[in-house]
Length: 494
View 1 (tube, rainbow, N blue to C red):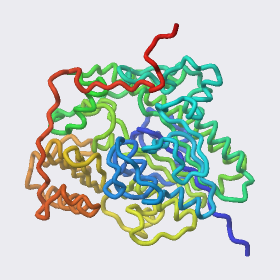
View 2: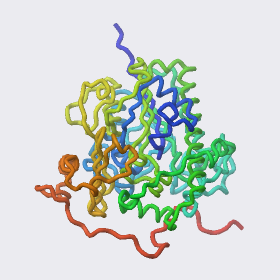
View 3: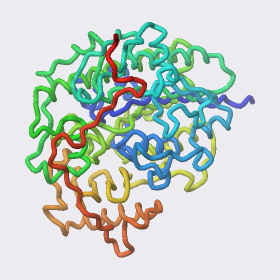
View 4: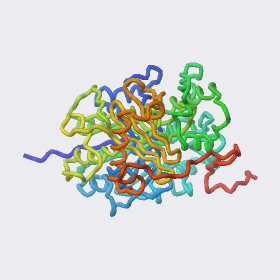
């Protein structure tokens, strides 16, 4: 009997998409018919978290299957481990005979254009050093857009100002990802080797810049107001305050109408991604490959969108650290069901390796195969997350009903009862320092930190390493950032 051909693997990924932005999973306002289809034909992991709520460390953990303490990549400024140090799952698949192909944002550091286990890549990064090095940006040059500075939206002072894209829909970066991902599927319909295909969207990462007329799909007055609890100051951490400043949102107050417009444009960006997902699924169906393709849709982290009076990512509240995760197995495994067991991006590597029919040794990954997790073949109580380290370290241990967070720059602990307070509006660590769940989860989080090799952050008797608490500077302009294209000379056109 001939051996069955291994599954194709389609890995679709968004940047900065909140967990609560899929219609089939309870959002009655957003329009996501194609993501709804994946949720209804596949299994939705409803309590999935990022191993680090920032782009580079989240992706380092995703491709290696290891938490930041093992990758050594704690933030966007840190280097990812090499394939010699920690092989990516793409490398594993390639060695097993898969053609591994990447389309879109990878955010590899230090080399944004490295392969890291891909046989080939079609690149689209946010701010390439040279437009000629980026496939998407160089294509725009060929189409006469040499005047265009920021194809993904105007950054810096306008980073959180909703803005229609200056590009038509068919030239928009999100549409390009749909084009190239669908083209790969069609071009490899008759390939003798299985493929792994990564289609990675930069949106809905800010600036929120959907194309015309998608910017009119949602209207600001219809959008929900941000959730700002009375105890806001007891709920946020130093990195929230710092990021609000850096993103020009630290202005002593919140313009609620602007926030509702942000949300409208953010939703429009997701709906435009959803359209591309539909085009990609259509390519699978028309080429007869849907029945032999595992499809996974996820995101690297979420977005505050004004909740807690905050903007951006980098926090451990669910709106920032919790992500959408949909998996459609071609055999229809648990189609239309929901799994509320805690999951993580570190689970992607063993999931893909298992789907390829490859063996993994115990302890090879920090993550677990998602099918085994959903079936109960393996057991898990909690997942973890970490942003930065040392005096800027932010750590989380989260279970189905409880979440513990520690912020080193604040020298402060946080405990949330997710069952009775799912919106995380009360810090029980402040209200009840002797809470039994606080003691237990502190111990679990500290054991995890030490287990990843970060032994200096926690003493043997369970004391956090003391650091001088950080304070925001008084100057309201200190900390503001610009993100101009490096190839721009700062001169107006002649």
